[in-house]
Image: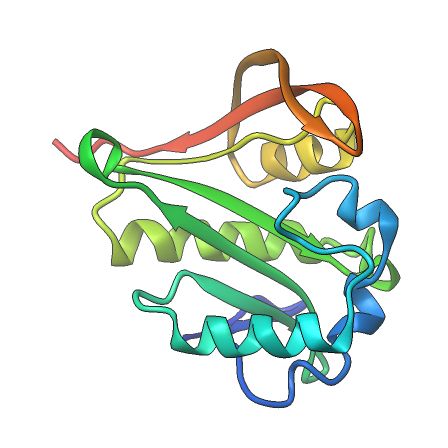
Length: 173
């Protein structure tokens, strides 16, 4: 997969991406806003395992965010099954050096279009921590709507946290 977003390129993961990934991923402020399966500290071995895992994943739903040919973040979505097979959860992160440049917003818009065109989805959603207004702003700029607040719905770094629920929906009747 390859999408030129102007400010970045969204593409399939490839060998070599693991080399510099820890430079961007090994950041406690990034880790504090992601699920626990994202490791901290983030090592070269973590990067190697991640890239290998993503290169083998089928269907392909996770992608590198690249700037000037270098993987500086990630974006993707987790498909659901059974009665929720029309839904997927989207997630993303970006190296601190690239914050504030509109990269995540552009990437999220592109991946949202891609997900709806390639899969039979009616809904993409995200559940950022309420303490992460930057992520909520990105979701809003990408056309996602806040559906509510999920009180005391997550635990991160030993703290019980509230999450916002954002969704982008399309009618496929």
